[in-house]
View 1 (tube, rainbow, N blue to C red):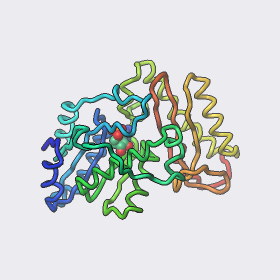
View 2 (tube, protein in one colour):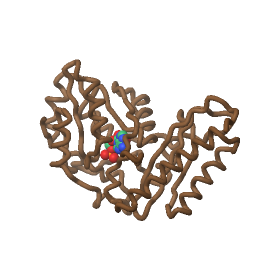
View 3 (cartoon, helix red, strand yellow):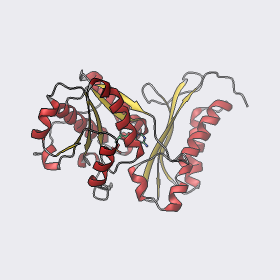
Length: 289
Ligand code: AMP
C-alpha cells in the first residue's frame, strides 16, 4: 500500500488509466470506514482497479466551537488497518498541501437541501464538505466514490453535487455499521465514557420507537417526532432535531402523502454530538397493532 502526502505523488495514480474507487475519511478508522473500503474494493478489483482512501481532518467543516483540535488523529494505526483491508493507496495530505492559500473558491450546495437539519445546526458545513470532496475528486479522478448512509444528508448533498456538476463519478451509499448493541460506529464515540456508550443506544432506540409509531399508530409525524425529542431531553440529551423527512429531498414528510421516509436525528450527550438515522418505508396507511 502506498502512503502519499503530496499531489505530485498522486498524479501518476490519478492518470494511470486504471479504474479507481475512492473513500474519503477523516481518519480514526473503525469498522464503518472499513466496510466502505470493502465495498470500494469489490467495485474495482475485478478490473485491476485501485482502492484509494483519503485521510484528512478538514478544518473548513468545523465551526470555531467544534472539536477540530480534539478530533482523534491516528494515522499510523489507520494505515495498518487500511493495508490489512486491501486498500492500495492512502492520500493523507497536510493542510498546506490541500489549502496552500486560503480556499476562496467554494462549492455551495443549494440552501433547500444544505440548510436543513445538519446544515441548520452547522452553518456552512455542507459547503465545506462539497469543497473538499470536489478537490479530492479533481485530484484523484475516481470512477466510483463510496460514502456512508450514517451521514445521510451528506450523501444526498454529494449525489446532487455530482449530478449537477456532471462529475463522471458513481456515488455509492453503504448502510450504517453498528456495534453489537446497535450503536452507530463513529470516531466521536471515542469521546464517550463507558456509561455514555450504553446511554448512546437511546438514540437508535428512539428512532426504532418512531418507526413503530409510524407503522402502528395514526399519529401525525410531527407528534411522533416531538414525543421522541421530548423523551430524549428527559433522559438528559440536548436534542438538535428528530425529524421525519422524505428520503427524496429531506423535506418534512406528512402522513397520508409520503411513504419513503427517513427519520434523522442529532443530539448531544454531554459534550459529544451524535447523529443517527433510520429509513422507514410505509406500505400501508392502515395501522396494524
Ligand atoms: P468520517 O471519517 O466521519 O468523515 O467518515 C468518512 C466516511 O465514513 C463517511 O462517508 C461516513 O458516512 C462513513 N461512515 C462513518 N461512520 C460510519 C458507519 N458507522 N457506517 C458506515 N459508514 C460510516
